[in-house]
Length: 282
Image (tube, helix red, strand yellow):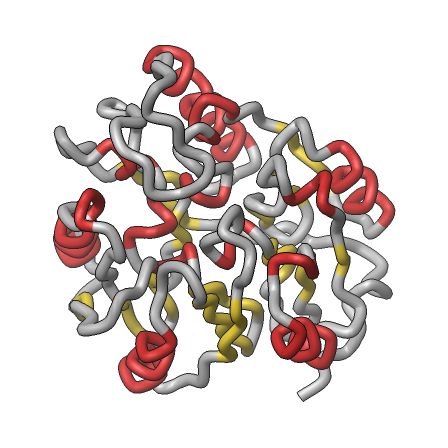
């Protein structure tokens, strides 16, 4: 299926998002499960918290509703709320983490969703790290695999939600989740738009992306290596790393409004703006 070019949309329209976040009250880097983590270098907890608060304030300033799930002691990566679930219009799918260090996060997020009317939450049989690897783009549901989420999880999600998943293979360990290599810029079914770093995907996946989104914005190595792709878009505003300057210029040329937010302390755990938010769809 080929998607109509989104690059010709004359005006970018923001949509109000309902987001879930988790304060980095226990954030630290005490183990290493991705190339960004260095347990030998101390984390500045106050700086991490201040950066997170700035992110929340910016999202609220843009008109988005933000809920906060309580942080759990001993789960330092719980701040990366995107990995907590996939909440789609068809239902909620929980997570099963690849690394035991994060295992306790799964039930904490599932319980919160059910207690707030977003359940029942399906507890998966296969490794599936939520919106880190499962991204909604209009009528498409893109699924990343190669480092964390298992291909079998894509089939499981298809069965639970009753909608197909397009599998994309990640090949660079720096971009271990789909949301580190691809930004959903607009998930309006009439104007779906994405940006991605081609070098993060194998050749077959690049061909799939070309077919689905022929006018997609393609970024470069410099953007990707500062996790510039790990951004939050409401269809008009794109919250992203201030270090992704070339990406910001590309977005402006396409009619988007870049909103830079420094999350450099949280980047030390391997996450940026998108990692810190889970979209709650009803």
